[in-house]
Image 1 (spheres, rainbow, N blue to C red):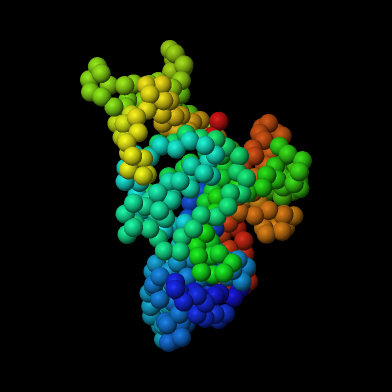
Image 2: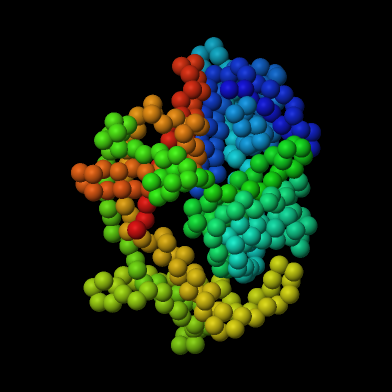
Length: 356
């Protein structure tokens, strides 16, 4: 796998094909990582400066920005080791400074948060040069979201995860801009008949080892959300209707949500009591998503029948089933780790845990 090196403002500056090892951890619901080890020489030192970007001949428009550079002495050899992160990580360098409230298609909502804090901010010093919003890709889902504080990367991933989608920042085809892309990987599970199915089961002889568990320890089904105000005047909303033994409460301090706030243009906006209650309820729903019954079906798969990059890829939804314990799980491919070393190239997938 050949590597291409770019420098912001200059574009392509060199190529690397001779290295000791390369590991790329491609993630669907968080940023991705690259680790490269190669011989120390002046050319490699000049190419692999902090802030430069690495792409591969497998995905020329998907860059990893170098965040770590080290030289390691191993006996008589000097080895360079660099660590890079995918460009969606740069969103972690921007916080949502003031309360922002948006509703609509999930792609539009996420991009409005990014635009107001990293592209078209009232404070020009917060804008990231060359960062642009790509066209929507057809992700289905309508949300209402209010955010104050927290970084853009985490908030973007969290909002998109609600509809099993994700976010990336890629090089534009002209190699001059960095394009924000929101997208959802294909469904290859048995829930649909449009795409070819990818099914793992011991009955198909493509599962080597497997384990299953279900856990209710952190399960909560009733969220009490406390918003603005003090004491008995504090606005409180409740999400959930369970009672008695079945009721499992969690408290959420949502004081950051205010009925009067400034929008991205600095204009004061005031929500009606009904709109504000809906905002609190939405916050409660979001917290309930993190307090579900966790059900996990984990397996070590035989990677012969279905091949990464040919039959499925990062983010694709696939099916696991075991008829003996009557379990069928349709989960996302949340991580693919690609390792390149003298023994060859290996792709190792990992699949998501489901919540019910």
